[in-house]
Image (tube, rainbow, N blue to C red):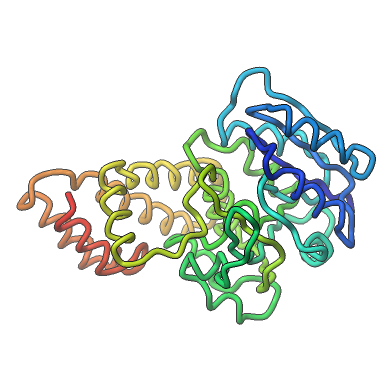
Length: 317
C-alpha cells in the first residue's frame, strides 16, 4: 500500500528539519513526502535539501500565499498514496507512527485514523499532558484500538483530534476535497465529515510530539485554567465563532448529500444551534428566549459545554 506524507509548510526553517528526521527514522518509511511551502525561507530549503537523499521528497513553493486551508488543499491534492498522513512542519513523530496507523487501512476503503500526541514546549520538552487530554477526550486513551464507537455524536460536540494526528485514505479524500475556504478549518472539516461517514479508527496511544510555540497556527494543545477558559469564551463571542461553526457544518452537509436522513438531521440541528448562538449578539432580554429554547432542546449539553455555554450566552455578550 502506497503511503504519502503531506506537509503544509510556512516559514518552517526552525523546526522542519527535526520533523523530517523523525519521518526518515520511521520503521515503515513513506513512499512519498510532499511539501508545499506557503512562506519559503532559506532554512526550510536547506533542511529539505539535506533529506533529499534519505526521503522521496517533492518540494514545491507556492507562487502566491494560499493560507493554511489553501496550502493543505494543494498538498493533499498532490499526494498520490492510498493512505495520506497529514503532517505539520514543527512536530516530531515516534518511529512506529506510520507502521501502527497504516494497519487501519484496506485498499480502496473510505477510512481515516487518528492517534494521540504528547504536548511539548518549543524546545521539544514533553509536558506530561497529551493532546486528547487538552481537548477533553482523555478517556479515548483507554479504549481498544480500532473503530471509534460513538464517533458521530461526539464529533458534533467537538472533534478530538487535530490534523497532525490524522491519516486518511485516498478514497476519503476523493469524497471530501477540496476543503472549504474557512480559517483553521481543514482538520475540523475532515474530522466531522469522516465521522458522519463512520470512517474514524483510533490508535489510543501517543505516536508523536505536538510542539507548542509562539508561531503555532492554532491554539490546540493547551490545557487552560478556568480564567483562560473565561477569556477564550469572551474571544469566541467577540469573533463570533458560532457563525464559523454554522458554515462548517453547512459545508459538511453540502459535500455529503448521500448521508442517511438521521445523520443529516443531526448535522442540521447542530448547524442551527450555531446559527441561533450567532444571532444572540443582542440585548439581554431579547436573547433570553433564544437561550431558553436552546436549553429546553438540550442543545447546549448535546453540542457544547453545557452550563458553561449558557453562562457565555447570558453574560459575555
